[in-house]
Length: 166
Length: 342
Length: 79
Image 1 (cartoon, chains in turn brown, red, green):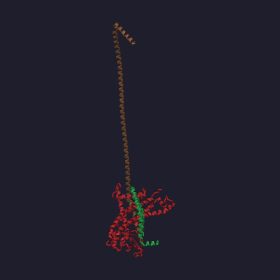
Image 2 (tube, chains in turn cyan, purple, brown; image 1 turned 90 degrees about the vertical axis):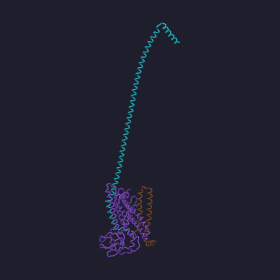
Image 3 (tube, rainbow over the protein chains, first blue to last red; image 1 turned 30 degrees about the horizontal axis):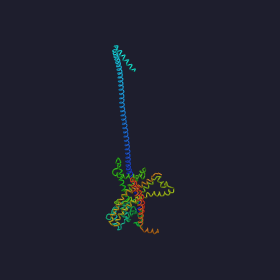
Image 4 (tube, helix red, strand yellow; image 1 turned 30 degrees about the vertical axis):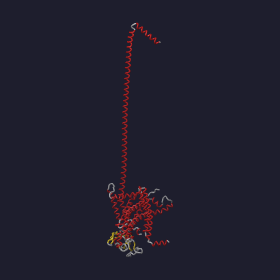
């Protein structure tokens, strides 16, 4: 029975001591310790958050860089393409012009040649005509120099005529 | 402890060894530290006796009883005559000169004055308080010294324990929003119980069995009860007197049960700690007593082995009981402050 | 009958009767704590990630069961 009867003296001293201990420890131990621990936790949380922010910013920056690089690359591509197009167009143009020029020259040459040829032909014809007339004059002269020959000719011609009629 | 018991047996009256008396002597509180016996004389550290009698405060040292615990040695102080019987102080009636006993060996002509002596439990409690203050204030200073709140030295040892009480006891039992208010109490009670449990296990302190004393556990349980009662919100009282969500006859039936439960909670706290610690001490002492009961040295190895085994378990129990007391206190605070969620 | 029992009880040492009572309570509490421990172990084996939570609630439940046995022990001190 004695063992389970709380004695007044110990209750008194325990209560007093415990309240004293609670107040002193609360002020001088728990407050600083818990404060330091939660401060540190807060600090760690903040540091993690700022690290996360930095990482995000870095990511953004990288994305920006990527974008700019892409744009530059695209621009270069288009520039090159344009240049190439201009080049081919210029070549094409030059070629066409040259062709046209050449054709024109050839045509002009042909026309000139044709003209010359015609002129030469006409001259030749004239020459041939005059020559043939001269020859014919001479031949006719020679043939018709005597009577016999004239008769013979007439004869032949007549002969031919009948032959043709037959 | 054991040495003391055997010397008792040999040097004093030639009576049989009574394990029950020896165990009770060690488990209960005492006025003075009995350290050892030297050539038939007890060597002890006297402690002050403080009494509140009809003549006012009366104080004297326990050494004035000259190690008498049978009520024969009468000390006259401040107009009163005092005797010590089974570590209890009795004041003799005016006309009496020595104690007379009835059939059951209770004194008949003496009364018990209000005794607020510094007993060995109170003394050890103060020693534990000094140690706690030294440890925790030194640890707190460490934080102030370091700029970045890094725990160094003893703070590195203390901090995991403090964080354990906060994260494993305070936060889950009371709730994320309200636990802060109760943290000083929970931390103080946890370390106060733990260190006194450990002190109770140290044999050289002659079994200053503070946390195995029902007055100590009663006081701490009362603190928990008072804090629970005063922090109880509307929802808590409603759950006690008018349980929501059950039919009216059930409400009437439940109310007295809940009111009883309100008081059973601190009583179970009190008894759990007291009985666990006391039972552990009794088992260790009983195992040791076997040697003297059988009067044979052959039993000693078995006794020592078993009490060593129990001692190791007791070391775990010191921490577990401190944890349980704190967890249940926190649980009761959590119940008292819980918001309605039906 | 009951008078005879009472007389017999008075003849016996009251302490030993209390000890028998405490022993009976210890059996009950032993079964209870054993069941809690067993179930906690199973739960921990099934869900090792919940280890800490299960352990602390098992300890608390064991404390509740143990309280009953301790009440009995205290009653046996009460003579």
